[in-house]
Length: 94
Image (cartoon, rainbow, N blue to C red; front, side, top):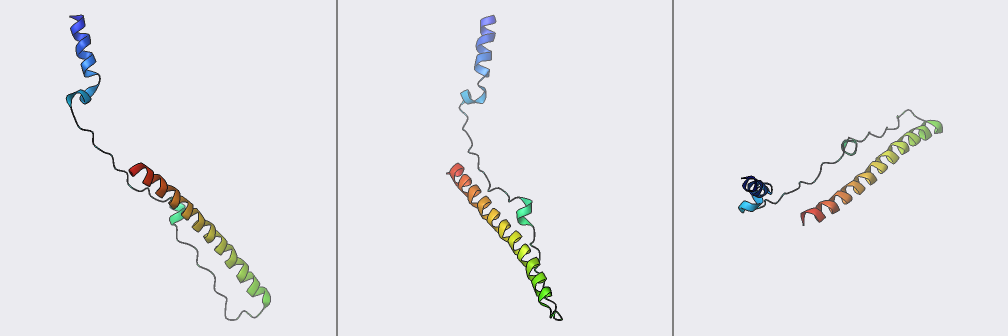
């Protein structure tokens, strides 16, 4: 009786694979981009029409250049993220 129980439990341990079931392929969706990369960029400041001093122009240029650099870094991060995930997605789905 013990041997019968052992044989039956050994047959049930592998699960459904012994019963001839087919494996179902798993499909992966392309991952979502991180939230900071999807945020709307800040608008550049326009130069006021009454700005006649060079200091006003330089201040505006400095602020806009800082915003441009932030946007440029975000753009480079986006490209790196996209290319890396596209490559990984392609390798896992093919």
